[in-house]
Image (cartoon, rainbow, N blue to C red; front, side):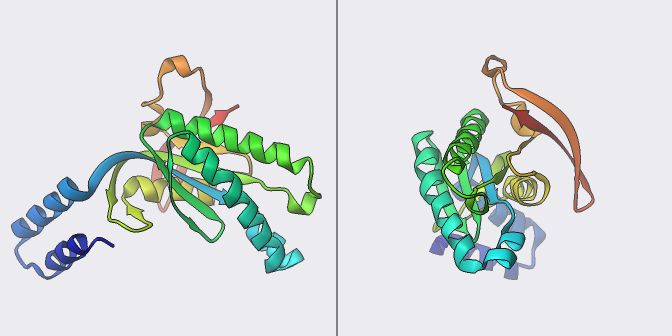
Length: 199
């Protein structure tokens, strides 16, 4: 974590004046905030595969996922923020790049799955959102769009599915020609308008 960010965050926590806290928060967003497209990919079936074949089996799949995902994300102009357990957290400058990369990744995994036994097949679920994020240095980022993309990718999307929030979909150019099925998702009691990308 950036030392200046941490110092301002601690000052925010001990500041008793609400106006001063708002000023600190505004300064944090000015210095560390950015508008990004958040991309969260989850390797499907962790619990079941680990239970059935053991953790070494699953870790080998996680590593293969990482080796395939990172170069494809970077080639599309994205940045891998971190790999955490069986998840990939990345960000892009725009939703179209994120969606196109999600499609490319699903197709790449489908292609390599032809060469492996079924228990080694890589299937992923992907969530995408667009909005304000705090880039605090080190391998992490924070914001509502990070939380929402995580919920979509980790909790709601099925294997092979790409879920994108409506606010991210609105940023897609109509010329992209992407087909999407509108859906309503409830996450922690909040309704999130989203679409499932068809490819």
